[in-house]
Image (cartoon, rainbow, N blue to C red; front, side):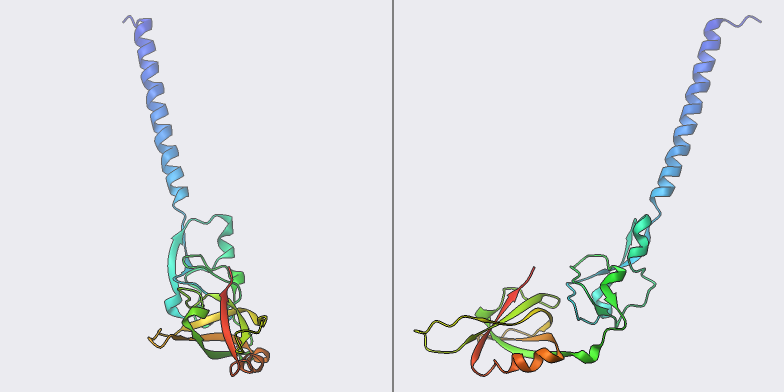
Length: 197
């Protein structure tokens, strides 16, 4: 049997092509398997501000690909309802381990309702926003009075329904020592809420 050089060349090309095809399929399978190592972690459904207590409605489980950084985020199996937010978390963000705590002294925080004129607060103010509260004394329009910063970096717990009366009720989270000083300004001052970024 005479095998020509052309037949040997054709068979080696076929064998080489088949081997490369099998190697490519194996590599694609391994890459796909490696890329699908996703984990379920908690993400926020809305804005969360420092001092807020996390509720179940604030959370959603999200499947993400996190390689070495997975330990920095809270697994969806972690029970975090009832914990306190330490750092601002934006809507849709993954919740980092360092952004919440169990042992925050809730006895040092108070929910304080404020009635604010609709023109004295930012548009679309909502739960989770962080604000500064300023007071401007109610005096004669001819006098120039500079505003006073009462408290800064205050978290909004709730914005109650806006009414046709031109005022909005806002529930803010204050430290114990900030409550009296803020309430002292309510009788003779106009409060202005300024959103921080």
